[in-house]
Length: 450
Image (cartoon, rainbow, N blue to C red; front, side):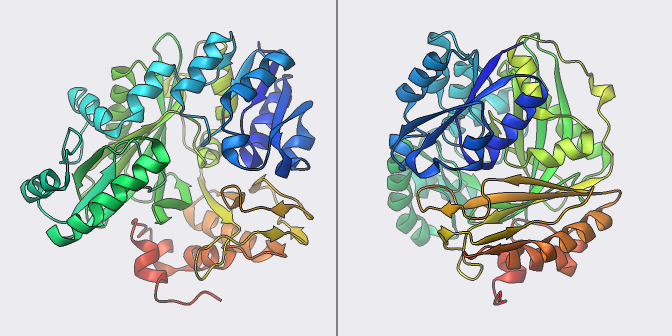
């Protein structure tokens, strides 16, 4: 087993990975920017190294510096967490070149799935249903207009290399498409270095359902049920749960089977997630493969009893999966909410110093924290400061636990989205399981959150 792992990340996910490493008797190495010198993940680690100024391009995205630290610290492996360098082909390759194990899929697999257009082609060949759309980069806006007429409005204009909703926009007619094309293409090029755009038919009132996979180096691949991640704002997930209130056992098996086919088609290994979009009639279509640990992985852990980070480490170490598909059982219901340092009325970031942090406790409550009392939330990073995860024997019990937990959650000194989260989980439509991606716009947009 690995003796020492460097976590190439920050915040709550770095701390969460370290917790499993400590449980497994593995030493941990933290990296940090000048802004994160006193962050909880730095204090948790056995060793820590400053890698640069606050801005991510000069610190957490500085591949050469991170590899230099890893070599200096004599680590066996690097866990990238999510975001930042977790799906960066070049970084995974640099790890391999320096004889450091990258805890995740191979650089070739990451590269394959980095292009949404190429991913669509591969999935179609593997018999995985895809949303009707274009399967080659659009040459210009004129080609986009012609293709949109064939597909039929409304459509989604998307960046092939996109993520986090960047370069993505709903378009309802030709005029809107002409206005949207150039701006989204430029944003995609600025953020991802790739301005390739494509079109997909818009699925109305959809749900966002994803399947968690584990695959070892011998090709054994299993799925761990689904997560419902439909409640989003600006294409970013806000509330996630497992299992989905909309999915029956037959559909679960069909989606799980499709996800396994997708993984085998690309020779996938380690933990990964296949994301699907689902219409009102339970027809599902491939969206993308996330070649990393997901933010929302705790809800799957809570209902399966598995530690996904431990599974990732063991697979990267060359171990065969210790469980089969028949061993996977879903018990109870889990819900996760993402707590952001942001104004609940505008969703704009709210940096500042946390003067008081008091979190709820209980046997059915789990926390993943990036901050503590006295922490400074800077404008340099994603504004998510914590995740609250609850479990219940039933969905109704889990909702009750989440509502009570949010009531007891205190963050002072900055604004957070806790009032918004409370409105969501207390809303009768949420309790009824009517959780489409339009939930916030439909039920909360017209409601001022105090």
